[in-house]
Length: 280
Image (cartoon, rainbow, N blue to C red; front, side, top):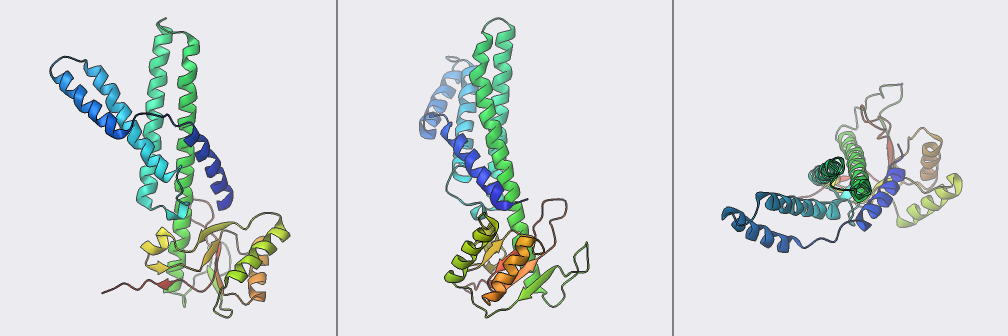
């Protein structure tokens, strides 16, 4: 699976869903209305059904706010934490469930003759938008897991570099290292990007650039380093390795896939990520 291709699809899906988000009242206004209606229901002056409807609307606004931050917002995938990813998927799933419930209720009215069949259209369209949002959220969360696995495997390799196992499917080591001159300059990266695009006719598939939430959580400083999501033994991977070696840029590669999931093989450009120094 190409991480950048997935990311590009996510951007399009998220933008489409964001454009179609309803312009509902603010959460503060809705909270005041809920409080007022609760008092009326308690005195018997308003039906419980009206309060239930308002509570669902309030919960939907809360979930929409979560998606605005994690799915529709400016956060890059690698900036999300696992907790945010789980929250994002759960929020999208709840919104989709509400739309499905609304469709079923609308269908009941049609079958009872209380509404025309054409009245179903806006409910079905809204459910379809929420389905696309849910698909985008789950794909984004899966991409985050792959980036997380890449970060973890880098950390494992750096901790026990002297004892590198073989890959499960052949006699090659899981990881290999090229020391180069020990530096990775901005000019190196610019040359690499341009040369890769000229050779393969597409952008270089970056999975993590600089500091990420996962590297920080693992206690590693990933600033000034870049992970490229290519199989190091593919045509692209072999070209990239030779190119970096010609520039004397340090890198290490990782071959092993994520078990049961898409490949997490990649090339880490730059020196190994150092441990983050924490103040005592």
